[in-house]
Image (cartoon, rainbow, N blue to C red; front, side, top):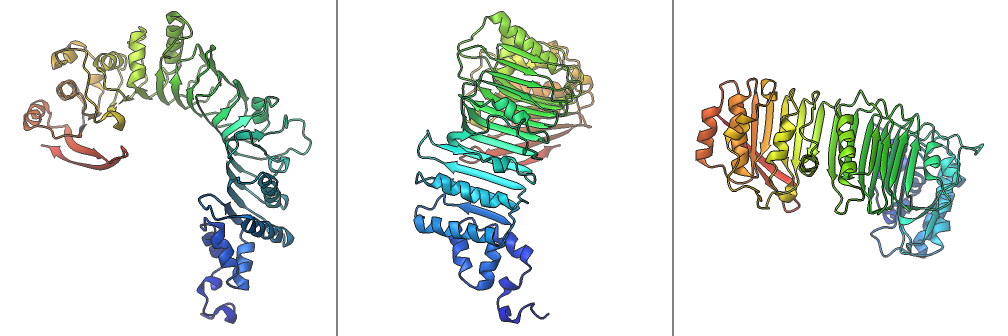
Length: 493
């Protein structure tokens, strides 16, 4: 096949279709590489300038200086001169000079002014905590923008005081992710977020200097809020009729009372990790399917024990419709201590209990299981952080199978699948034997272990195994980072 241009007959790169070349150029994560490529030939320079997917970064490169910044200035000016539209704009910038803020704002204007930009990702590193960066109105007003991600590096992000009254604000933004930012005191953050009428996904990660947050939106479908060690003490989520996935990671350091109020009638997935709040209210969510709860009692409770128990009971009632429930062992233990267990989870079919401590968890687990009559899948997982620790049982003797037999669990008539990761071996082996013997419809049992299971234990399990039940013994090993690196095993015949 004859090349399109005989001049580039020996240049395979230049003869590729523009779309493919532009896709390749997007993976040049250093502007230095793009600068070198642009001087190879006139064709390469044209391809670099006309690339609709732009990535600018000076991170991890200490050799950049004023000459490099000047190159970016000329590069962006040429794109503007030739009317090159930017579809995806990603900027990762570490500020070394006070004047670089104006420079970056100019580049951002060039990327937005010609229209057509759909994705903007911004990540900044500021050496001065008091540094301020203004999110330009031209970005928020951009009608083509669908995805906006801003990580301000714990600096102040100056936002408009309001957008609802702006006559030029007609954005169709669908995905907004704000991370590591400080909000000005005069900014009504909740009202600002509620101004985005087409927003579907909202992710707020470490939004500082905000004490209360009220989010009112009829368009948001997925909401993620992460706040660790911030002063955020009140979250109010209202009129979110389309919200189906809500995830909260909220460990407040505020010494004042805090509250969580949720109105999401179509909520299907709910996750909440953090400290128990003083006031909790979730309006009826009849479509809730998945719930993941990992709450801790504060080290210094702000209210009395009665108010804490009242909050926990309200939370449990809001979870009654869930079919898939995952709880951290610390939360199950807190429920037991506050007298909230057993509790009727009549709809729960899949239960996961994640062990994150080395304490004795038999009693909280037993109380949980008494409230799950329709359980079909049970998963007892051990977090990698406690794998190498030593179990600290509160009793001298383990809980024998007779203890489990005395509980008269109702779920044994429905249970089909069990996965148990061994940690407190004697107690867990006794539970496994009980389930093998009493679970009438049990189809599969998976036993995970990190140290070898003795032949005596294997013989014990064989005694209770039914012919219709498949039992698998699998060794699970971790690397130095605590990640699973291998799972090997065999079926118990």
